[in-house]
Amino acid sequence: MAQYSRERLAAGPTVSVAPFAGIALIVLACLCFSVLDAIAKYLSASLPTLQIVWMRFVSHVLLAFVLFQVWKTPSLLKTRRPFLQGIRAFCLLGTTIFNFLAVRYLQLAETMSIMFAAPFVITALAGPMLGEWAGLRRWIAIIVGFAGVLVVTQPGMGGMHWAAIYSVAAMTFYATYAILTRQLTTTDSSAGMLIISGIVAAIAMAPAGLSVWVMPQDVWTWVLLFATGAFGGGGHFLFIMAHRMVPAPVLAPFIYTQIVWMIALGYLIFSDVPTVTTLVGAAIVVGSGLYILYRERVRGI
Image (cartoon, rainbow, N blue to C red; front, side):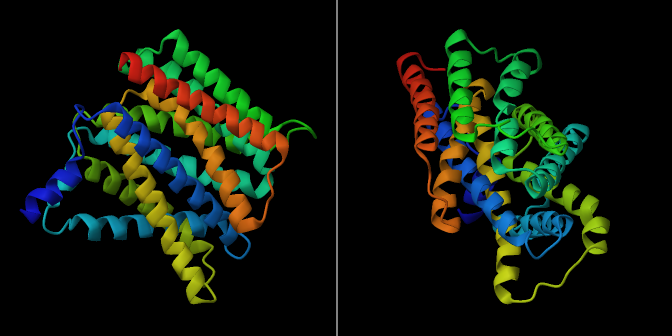
């Protein structure tokens, strides 16, 4: 029975699961990604970015191996489409590297406004690549959600830094990663996708991560380094399961909920008090998501 349960968890749910479960998973995934960004921001004050990125994937792999007991079920590492798995892994790695680099050089408002262009790209690519075409109402919800993000971030107030290219690169990698995730859910297990992407990224980043290594000075720093893998890997497992259940255009607007988590974490961890425009923008973002939920309840996917 335990073996059966573990294999069911590794494979992930089937497409017959209600779409609302998939939407809930993508919202929780965005929470995990927000916590990951908060930890990375905290650690970057004392550790090199490339070291944080490498440890994020090393701890990701270690925790996934233990959770899924890969030594008992090595078949989890098999894939029917290794080429796509490899491209997807490097897209995840590219997203992480460029996002962490952007945070070092840019204001959070600038990085967020660029990264949140990803739902446009995902929705546009989902039609020709996945056959999942978004209707007018979903496009409107995405545009409204993005408008809410712009209300919060108010980008361009002081001119854009040259390092904005980092955020553009991170957004492009992220959108491609989302599309490939949806494609691979039809043939590969959720656990396999999670572990393979972590292994590829950890191996690829090892030379760079070791070359800039700075020994953490206390236990708390080590805990946070391993927490990057827990929240990063956990978030992407939820991300994979959500895309196994629900078409990409339906999930795309809910990526904007990450800004709500960022506001909450900024207040709780960094004592950043939200302004009136921040709260108004967050309300617009939440409203666009609630509209999609309403439409899915009325018509279904």
